[in-house]
Amino acid sequence: MSFSLRTRHSVLPGFGLALGFTVLYLSLIVLIPLSAAFIKTATMSWEAFWSTVTAPRVLASFELSFGAALIAAVINTFFGLIVAWVLVRYDFTGKKLIDAMVDLPFALPTAVAGIALTAVYSSKGWIGQYLEPNGIKVAFTPLGVVVALTFIGLPFVVRTVQPVLADLEQELEEAASVLGATRWQTFVRVILPAILPALITGFALSFARGVGEYGSVIFIAGNMPMKSEIAPLLIITKLEQYDYAGATAIAVVMLIASFLLLFAINLLQWWARRRGGQDS
Amino acid sequence: MSSKFYSWIGALALVAASAAQADTTLLNVSYDPTRELYADFNAAFAKHWKAKTGETVSIKQSHGGSGKQGRSVIDGLEADVVTLALAYDVDALAEKANLIPRDWQKRLAHNSAPYTSTIVFLVRKGNPKGVRDWDDLAKPGIAVITPNPKTSGGARWNYLAAWGYALKKSGNDETKAQDFVGKLFANVPVLDSGARGSLITFTERGIGDVFISWENEAFLAVKELGPDKFDIVVPTISILAEPPVTVVDKVVDRRGTRKVSEAYLQYLYSDEGQDIAGKHYYRPRDAKAATKYAKTFTKVALFSIDDVFGGWQKAQKTHFADGGVFDKIYQPGK
Image (cartoon, rainbow over all chains, first blue to last red; front, top):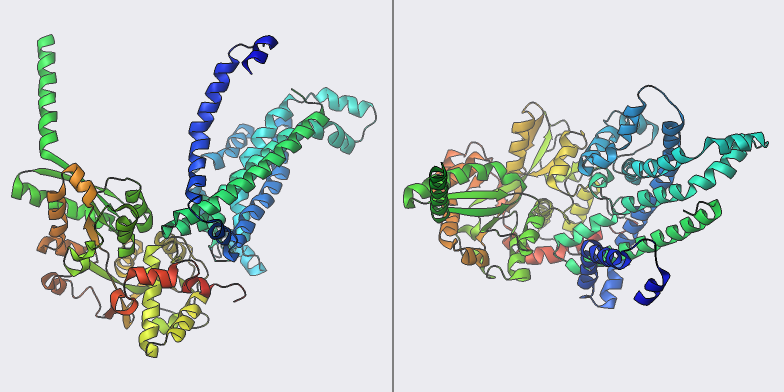
């Protein structure tokens, strides 16, 4: 490997050192802790592992965790784009303030977010008291989980799309307009391809964050078995029984599923980038 | 100037050295609602120890969910003593990490539980739904708040109290007990993961008619949130909740703190220790303190977990392990 490097004469020196550091750093921060989960799981037999992760309650929790994270990520992708658009394209008083507000879900301790959301959406809360009589229950239902995940995932989409939108040259849109494109065509053919990779990144980040989220969800979910139990709660449940292997088994399934999904999203992004001609 | 400087350093070093000799620091790893109890007790014990031996001891406290605290100690948190919510979490120290001998619970009087509590009901002021006893909790139209017994040690006491009541009432009919507890849990709209979460759901969110609670926590809630908002209802029969304490042998032997740690726990049984427990709404074991606080605590028929369930290990396995009775109550399609 080092031979091919030397012959290629990279303009940027220090590849070996940088790669070595990257691998070391990733190992220390990511791989070693994650491998501990796999090692703990390996203490189980295959049958025990399989019956743990396919128990009806565990399957229901996977469905909720991944399903709610997916819905929340879709919502965030749509509305996050609108927020980013408004923040980039328009000038208005209080813009700086709104811009700063977008980051709040990042900064707020998730438990605080969960308690605040539950307070607002429970049957006696500000919003909940109007929703409940109309048959819409938010707190303590899967819908509440989606609300919490939407809340914590919003900044990911806004913050990834915003800089790309800001870099976008408005001349392109003017040119499209001059060449006779409708507004819709301009958006779909000119703007969307350029921001699609960033949008997909934002979606993926929002989704990944939602799958593993615990703090904010646990207060609003209600934690009813088979209905509103998220997978991380079942991990805690196993730990309360000192069943370390069972807990890590669920974690391993979540890890693998998340990795596969993120990998697929990365492929999609790579494809979008090539198609959008934004290869940089 | 420099000589003065050095003498300062010397004095500092001397102070540090003497402090290191005389000062012992203990870590008491406990569960959530004992924060104020141990803040008081630690001060009392430090004073007592100073008077008795001339040594200065300071005690640090760590609080959290009982199971989580137990796991922290197993994973290496250097606790000299643990004071947890249930024997099951202390058993784990023996089983998973060999930190203490298996017969730890026999080392101190009264099952190593110097103070006890029981399970009572917190209801809204004036008791609008007329809740008197466990039966009322399983009636239709009553919303009951309790945490998930699978994640909360405290909630396991709640569940077992209900089960024990149903057993006594039906003449030890397990099927009827399961039916009763199933009906009770069908009335639970939210299963928070811990007791604090449930308390918030009941008090702040205004959800539910009854909150099943440890007696000492019910008293604290009424005291903090206002006696004009909630009442405490004591059922006819309830469980004797024994939060146990023990020295962590491996840690105290390594740190050389066995003597003071053992004295610390012994002092919980002393007149002063018992009085502090009573002051913080735990039922004292000692007759003298019990008489003093007799007005606070309603008389109730208590059964112990050993009598009815054959100890924590067995109760845990039958009721709360995966596939156990509690899971059966929540079978899909039910």
